[in-house]
Structures are given as C-alpha cells and as structure tokens.
Amino acid sequence: MPKKNALPSALKLLLEKGETQFQSGISVDCVIFGFHEQQLKILLLKVDTVHKWALPGGFIKKTEPIEEAAYRVLQERTGVKDIFLQQFHVFGAPNRADASIHQKRYQSFGVKIPKDNWLIQRFITVGFYALVDFNEVKIQPSEQEAQWQWMDIEHLNGLMMDHAEIVQKALETLRTQLAYLPIGKNLLPKKFTMPELQKLYETILNEQLDRRNFQRKLLSFGILNRLTETKKGGAHKAAYLYSFNEKKYQKALKDGLYGSW
Image 1 (cartoon, rainbow, N blue to C red):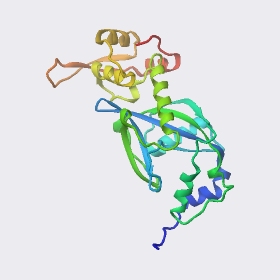
Image 2 (cartoon, helix red, strand yellow):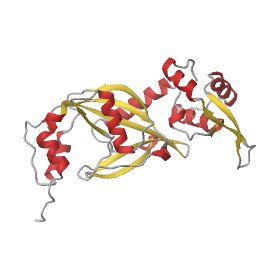
Image 3 (tube, one colour):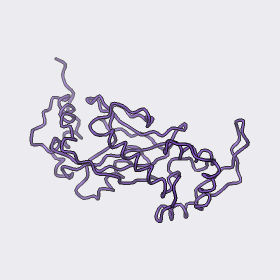
C-alpha cells in the first residue's frame, strides 16, 4: 500500500483548532461573476479528493462581520480589491452540508475526523455574489485546491452540494438588481463602447434590448462619460468610448437607479 502524504498544516489546524477561531455552523459561499468574450462566467474550484466543482467559500472568524469574511475569501482567492459584493440569500436546508466531502479530504491523508468534530456538523451558508473584472483576477489557490476555472454560466454541471441552487439564486438576484443598480464598472474595462455595455446587459438578462432605448436610458442616468476616443476596427463605424463617472456611479449605488429593461 502506498504511503500517504502528511496532513498539511492548514488542514491539521482546521481540524484541531478551527472551532476556537471560526464560528461553527455557518459559512460564506461566493458566486464570482466575470464577463469575457461576450459571455457571463463564474469562477469555480475543484479539490483533489472531491471530483465536483465548487464555489469559493470559507468559514467566518469569530472576530469578523459576515461581509468582511466574504471580502476576505474573495481577496485571498482572486487578488482583486475593487469588488462589487452583495449578500443575496441564506441557504439552510438541514441536509445541505455533505460531511463526506471533509471526510474524504482527510482520509486521503490517513486521518479520520471524529464524529463530534465541528467540520462535519450541520452548516448554513450565507450567499454573496461578486462582480469582478475578468482580466484583473489572479488566481491564488490554497495548497489543497487542484483546479480553478472560469465557466460559462450556461454550461454548468457537476457542482457539489447545493452550489447549483446558490448560483441560480445569485443570477436571479443579479437580474433583478440590474433594474436599479449600476453594475458595469466591475465587469468591463475602464473604457468601453456602448455596444459592449449593451451586450453585457443582454447577456445577464438573457434577452435582446433595443439599441436606441438602451442608449437613451443609460445616458439619462448620468453615470457615463463619453470620451473623445473611439474604438476602431471591424466593418462598422468607429464607436465612441465611454467610462463611468466615479462620483455619480457611487451615488447611484447608494441611491439606486429606477426603471426596467
């Protein structure tokens, strides 16, 4: 029988001391949205011993607010600091947490988790969704994570536990909030064209929008600056580039935008 690797120090501490540092029974899971090649994508990870994709998540320190825990998880995993973050739902089905996931991970190192250990008790999770610039993300995996991958929102399969439900609820919330919150700043480059912004909205909503109505409505919010630069290339006329007005954008995040698409 091949010799098993030694249990990594981080997993050893989590098993033996984790309950003194983290709040037992509650975690955060983050749906990280990015926009790339005209597709809405989410960032997923896979652990060696669990052959299913999962959302980035983590435990909540006893000394930190829940939202700060979500920020910490996102910054540690992506390296991105400019993050649009929204709490959207709590998931608490009695059987949602699969204890075998932790058990398999530790068993791969020859370690058995005691039945009364905090890691395999019931957990509820607080769902957050984050909007990030796809090109700014620099994956920073932990020593236990084998793979990270951006996946098209339309082609998700094989997610562990209730993570498919969490993704769907996050997408529904994003679509609803699109009517009254500006979201493009975190998903697009600093300079973009109106067709690129419209394509982002259409991709999220999964429907086509009238070009003139879309442009008129977005400009009426006063959150865009039209630049003197244009984007050249392709068969169409060069399109003006836009950027977000930071001050007005932040005000819109606070006060909201109104109307439907």
